[in-house]
Length: 166
Image (cartoon, rainbow, N blue to C red; front, side, top):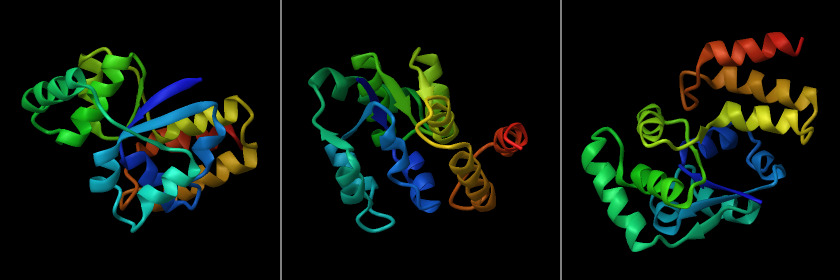
């Protein structure tokens, strides 16, 4: 089973379109530092608990991950400590990082960490036939409708996928 170190913003995207359970159809285990779950998954209220019910696993981090996160936080000024912890976990465990955060994606690229975001999860779901074309389109349409507010995704990526599924 693939493990994925998770940041918070992708979950907000899926919550916003009322599809929070969808990513858990993939044969993946999403992990997040337990303190991040408690500190960052508070809006909307109880999001952390909802995600844990779906299968998100709160984890402890090693000393190596902690010190690497501190190093990243000093180096990548536009990332939060929780972002840096997610990156450190992904790097130390050689797993994928789940995030839509632009600055965290740039840092991950510099660190040689594979990144996936909201659209990437949807692409995996459709490619693996975990969702139908209709479900895929519905998600994209909802994301497009909310884009620019709570959802912040590349418009062209959404539009391109919608065109391909006509």
